[in-house]
Length: 61
View 1 (cartoon, rainbow, N blue to C red):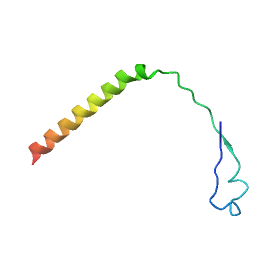
View 2 (tube, one colour):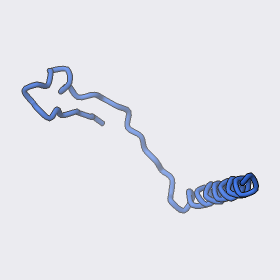
View 3 (cartoon, rainbow, N blue to C red):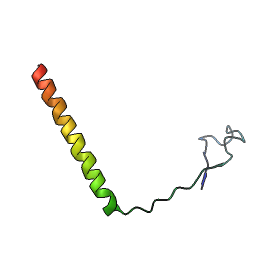
């Protein structure tokens, strides 16, 4: 995969800035149904941590 950057003013762009840069291609073979349990777990953990933080703030006030 190639990434090329374009300057707003082509006359001001140097030859090196307009040179494309090669980057590694990444592929993902996961199905969304495989990721859903992990996302749900992360969401529940974040919700618990947020609730605990709120409880500590209300106790401190």
